[in-house]
Length: 190
Image (cartoon, rainbow, N blue to C red; front, side, top):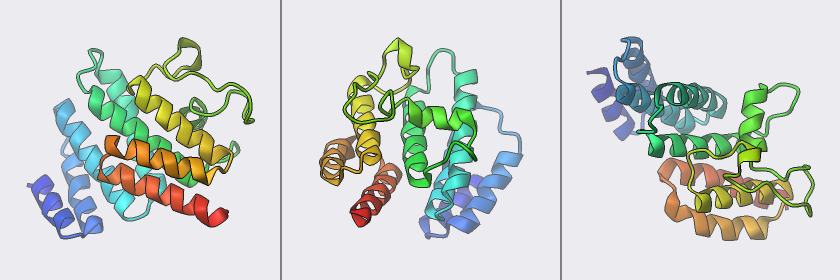
């Protein structure tokens, strides 16, 4: 019932109220992996709608750890890929510093950056064993995501606009909205 109430409130564009009911549903000790993933995705979506990117990242990080620990057969591969994209976009928006961010969060973004942190040097190849990527994204999507991170890193808005056009067909509504925030911010900087 709490999930249905949350869904209805979200449909009415009332994410703060929906969040309350999703949190109540989560507190009822969800017994299945599917329910846990679904409710936490809804909670993260509410935080994103509210502009609370830090809490959204926190929920998605917990969810990523949960799926890594409880999905040895990779049955929830698509959800894990969506979580990875959201986490990267949220980190690009938040722009965490090394001083106030947990190392495991920095690692999510670092695996998509230039190896040395400077343009002009060869980037890590997405999916290669030595970069720790090998995650849930297919190679083409991982390369597009890596290109977006590098374009932000070197402040290349033209490349970012082209990459946005290329990756948009692979993204859901929330991911598109976060990418638009990133692109808009970078364009204002230049």
